[in-house]
Length: 185
Image (cartoon, rainbow, N blue to C red; front, top):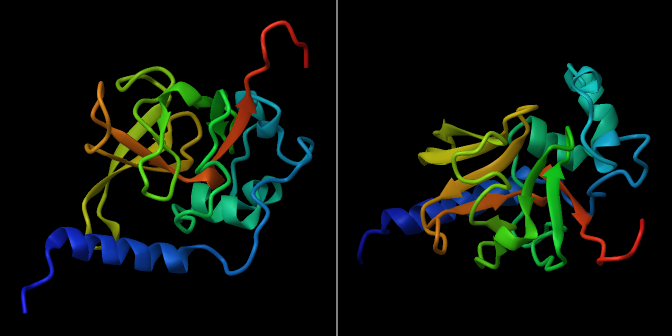
């Protein structure tokens, strides 16, 4: 019998990790009321950002807190925005910072929303990158540069022109659909 390749071992570990990271059963993705989480309505002023885990827990659903503040991962193919094709902007669920546009979104088949670049480009100021050595792998974690929320990971197997795939948890983002020209909110 042939030994398991490193790639397949990494995938097996990843799927094992994702299967245990999210709480069982349906979990609301985000509070519907912007009064609970102002990031749903837009970018939060710096002086209104929570500072403690207790404050974050009050604003985020249990899944959002686990993923965005504790570096968890939602289960593959369960995220709210995995198949979204509506034009608009994806923002950080914690601070409301614009992160990605629908123009950079593509279907990678990985089970999470995928983008080939952040809203301000690959070397922009909205996304921070960090080495992630968890789950017996070395990956590049991406976080919101403004509030430190864990978003997901970036891989070098994406489409042109960047060749990158930003694999992002739906629980870490919220979405503003673009209004058709000439219509008001």
